[in-house]
Image (cartoon, rainbow, N blue to C red; front, top):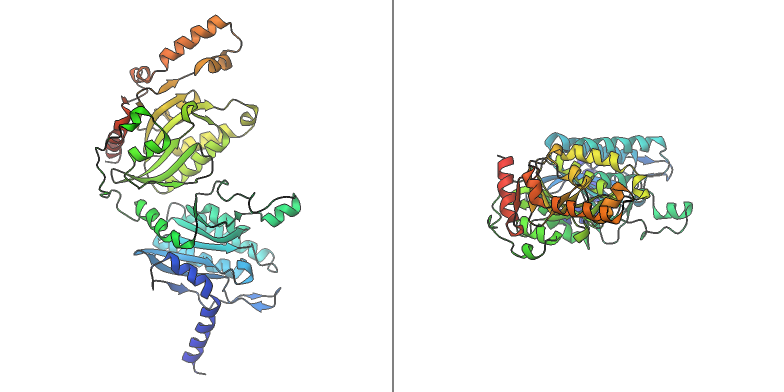
Length: 455
């Protein structure tokens, strides 16, 4: 057999062994755009007595609607997608190329962990993969797609990505349900939640849905699209329905250009909604506190969701609009016994680095004001919607908590005082708020502020 025929034979063998994983890759990228890298890298697995030929991982480059991307795909057909030292080296080489060219990386992950038999060698390989992934932060976005269960070290890669898509009922967890069940009892895929563990997660029914969502993400990140584009939405669009009722969905719909807002981390701390979109055509991040009439109590989970999102926003150099509705720190033993204040200060350090517009739409009480509204932590513009409350205390409960046991007459006196002082117009008089605005005009104010701070 001559060299050309030998090459064709080997290519045919490799294509057959990687056919299934490449079918998944082709669903995410442009047709005919995939070019494989390191096709013939070999790795001997002595424990299983077989050559895995680097087939446990397929890497290459391609395009998504013309956007260049690098691709890393785990081949579940080879030892359950187990990571090997050679596979890790292959991933690192791909990530190194992505770093040099500042091109996004798409991971298709499907793995039960590592290949046993390699010992510490594979741990060294995993460490290198995680190092390269960390170095990509702020250089190029990483998009992980869990096409099946992602367990063990591959789950760290998914968690470190900027965006993680979970297909169907796939499970993403460092410790597999089987391991947890053996050690603790009763754990299952259903209890190892993929959406409530802090991943920047999108849940999709099938892989066929992912390409359009990946494209939506890339066209929102201004590094891969124009910072400001014409979305066709009216800059002066009013939202009169907000004058009757202000809620999370109404604020998003009123402020962000039609259909542009992409929610992230859904299912994890539902009282805080985060995502990216366009406002007046400008690529913008959004943080919206829910909580209804009562507002959001500051807890460790609330702070961690905000902190993790702020880190992502900083990496991608986006301005942020922060809609505040906070009742201050949750005053219970459980919250006080956590690292909530330490993590809050970490979150505020990140927030201070952002171009930020803050809108108090219901209430900002106590630490809810100091942390999320005050210009001391970097708010460029602060607006309050008419009818919102900004105060040191909130009602009888706040007074009693602050001053301890006092007689009823004194509580009434203090309550009357703070009802008067918490009106947002009083905060505007003190210079704490730049303007008090009618809810229906929030879009125009946010757009004009964005144009000023980004000029």
